[in-house]
Image (tube, rainbow, N blue to C red; front, side):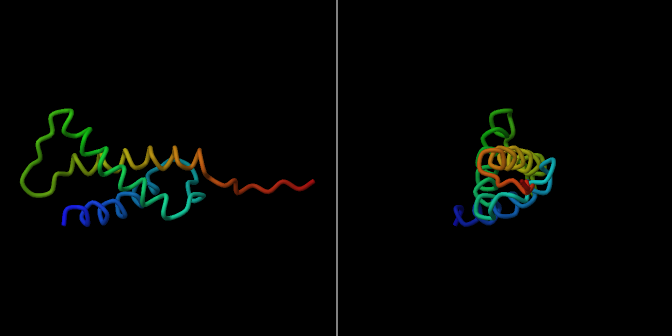
Length: 91
């Protein structure tokens, strides 16, 4: 059941990471955005626990903010590596 939660959270965090990422990051496909979100959730959890986060009762906002920031970084990296250019050059 936990894997389904990570996937659902990854979809939401990926879209939020795409929204938070600087510039125009609409040039990567949706499936890659979702993978960035899932990576953001997993890597964000490890970063959170590495710096002493142990969870709190209820919603742990710090962990989710870290996950969104990590997902935004992953979206920027994915956009730089695989993104399509939106500018047209006419010759």
